[in-house]
Length: 252
Image 1 (spheres, one colour):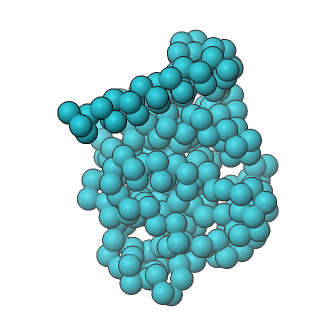
Image 2 (cartoon, rainbow, N blue to C red):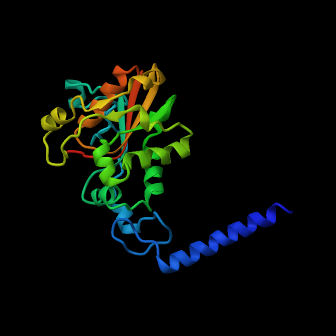
Image 3 (cartoon, rainbow, N blue to C red):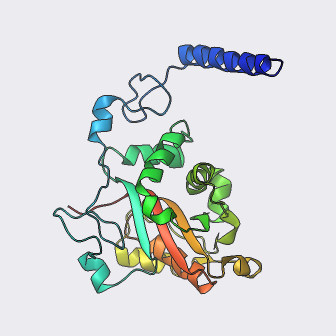
């Protein structure tokens, strides 16, 4: 009984704090900013607009098919030029609804919905977690990290780490080149832009030997960054590199 009273008191204090906080700063939908019941919740209309990426998918890159296919089917792009990474999955289609959410997380320091994004990624990433050894977020160059103050991919990776128990190892992969922003680049320009941009420090390479790595990113567009990261990780000894992102672009 002596231990339960302080626990109940702490729970009551936390509940009172949340009540006051919700009165002063009511929870809002991360998409349209309308009022919702709890932090991280979407309103019903916005949730219905989110395009979840579901099977059937390409067995490698995870791009969705419009017709039913066998589980081991590859898309034409992967058949023509197999990625360096072994498998990739994403939770959402990157479109007019999800793009503002990623932008808010990436540039506007809006972390209130981080836990909800982590849950979406956990749901989409079930195939990539099996037998995995560690999580590695896609790194930022130190100059960009200094300006932005945080790495959104690392925030997602640490959230996933807390839920799965897999260690998050951001120090295993470094961005050695300060590359240009890739938003308006073609696939070929992106491939050239990130070529040789990533490396694993020599002192960390033994930790990667024969390990299965889950690479965490916010958005996969052409796969150029994921490919460059996977190449660096495998060169350093990783057995497999699996990619998990919050969102990915899907061609109509």
